[in-house]
Image (cartoon, rainbow, N blue to C red; front, side):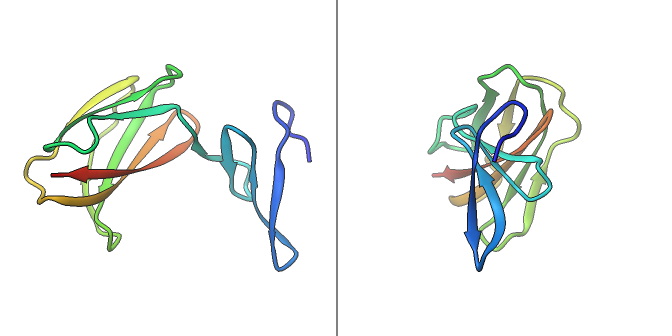
Amino acid sequence: MTHPLRTYTELHISSSPLVKTDSNCVYQISGIPVIHKNTIRVSPNPNNGIIQVQDTNGKEIRKTEIYNLSGLKLYETGLIKNTCVRLKLQKHPRGIYVLQINTENSVIVKKLLIR
């Protein structure tokens, strides 16, 4: 199947197209880009509770959210509108977290390790 700007393949489960993917994005059925590979840099990771999140394509980061592995939202920033943001998470215990980054036109999910 062809998108105006991309070529992508469809993944089928039970003969139903659930996800479309190309080398840069994973799309839900809605066509909204969900994950951009290699465009968000989270450093350092693992970290001591202070991290920097940067979109290497220069797209604005609109919001970040931190979830524990049970899916409970622990942290959320307000509207950011910047290509780089520094998060201070020292209050959270050591462990693995899920970092969700909302950019101009996509949602990126990264694993985050606080040690």
